[in-house]
Length: 379
Ligand code: GMT
Image (cartoon, rainbow, N blue to C red; front, top):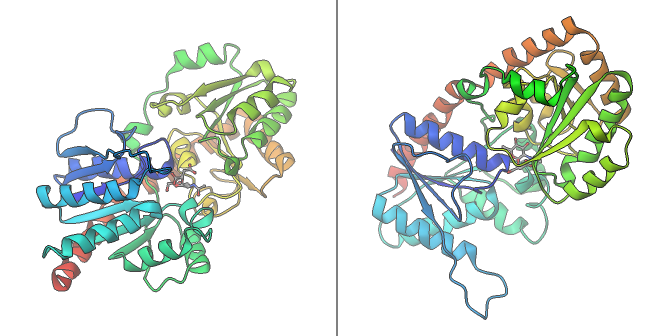
């Protein structure tokens, strides 16, 4: 099958899922064409059956805002015609779903029907998408999709709540490539970061306000008062300097390190003891799944789709948004006892196995087959 993928190429979860899915499809013999404005971050190496088409937005003095959607649509039409794409899979509704709809219309006027599947990831529904500047277009494009998926049941419910949706939405959760994530621990990293065998606490995100990274620091301060520990903060984004200032003012400052954006995030996760995800809203929490796949239990909020991943008292604990006292209590409970920590680590990995890409990939392939069978009739 020849599959076009539209996604954000950056470190965001939707781009990671799109890229890992594309790579896995290519390994199974499908031809995968990524169409976006820069090389997706997880597409670092040459891979057979994987192609990347860069979208260039022509500038003009009249444009205050460059028309990326128009350029992306034109590129999709061009690639679809030349490469004879069978199907397009768009990740994150804005603007990819309406772009795919427009491309489908253009191609239809030339006698081909190019079906598209929209995968909803989270903030495209829960934060940005429902804003009135986007809602009508997002609603229309979702309803026009040949199939729609969401990454959790919670996101599916949110979509029906916030938009007038007439389509079925299939829940296909985020996944993980366990072959990559459950690797040998880099013990020399651990010795360098925690020379006195301190507990290692990790957070990874895009440092947007929705991630509440300040709560990570608050939790860590409380933990550090009771248990020798180090905090590693992975990622970058709008809240980073605010959080850096907060860290400089806190007593545990010397035990906190900002690592910035990391491609091989699993190398750090694999030496961790605890992952903290205190998000305001989280449709799934891919970062937490990545941690669990590296045998790291998770302290998180109980918002959105997180309860579909983090099992209370088994793979970690969940608290209400902002309840840093409860999160710290739970973190200390896991970290203070070696045997308990080992049990939580084992539980985290066992549960992560349920989200292995080998389990999830066939569900996307089956969906592509169903859509293609229907599309032949439509054309
Ligand atoms: O918030 C992010 O980390 C980025 C965002 C995205 O769409 O790029 O992530 C969303 O999609 C991920 C992959 O499906 C989910 O695991 C995240 O939970 C979701 N983020 C939010 O809902 C805030």
